[in-house]
Amino acid sequence: MAGHFPFSGKANRVSVFAFYEAQNWSLPVQEQYYKRWYDWAKNYVMNDPDLKAAKAPEFAHYPYGTHAHHNFHLSDYIWATTLLDLGEFIKHNILPRLSHDELHKLEEEHHHWIEEMAKAAEAHPRAAPGEVGRYRHV
Image (cartoon, rainbow, N blue to C red; front, side):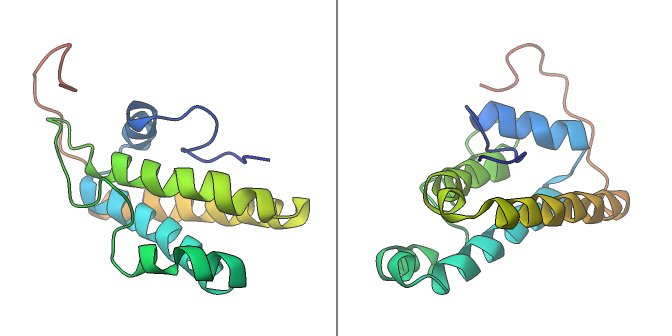
């Protein structure tokens, strides 16, 4: 049911950041990827009467979530924590509503997002991480 998304399963900010690192995405590309999920989730919420009544106000401001606009890690976890907030909402409130076919379509769409972000990453390469050692996440 959860699909193959960075916030699937027992995700946390470190695992989402590891996804970004594995893709070698810079902060601008991470934001573009986040924006894809944000737009998709907002569109779903606005077109579902129950979710719209309960959650539309949470999408009144970009980005979504408790950690929006907070970058409190040396390794720039801002889009990892923000995606995790949005991902938790998607995982618990939207994905269970999707049919098998709708989830499969979303997984295909997600695959295309990854391809688009790979092209964007070429234009906006990720800076090499600073040499801070083992505790760089602190």
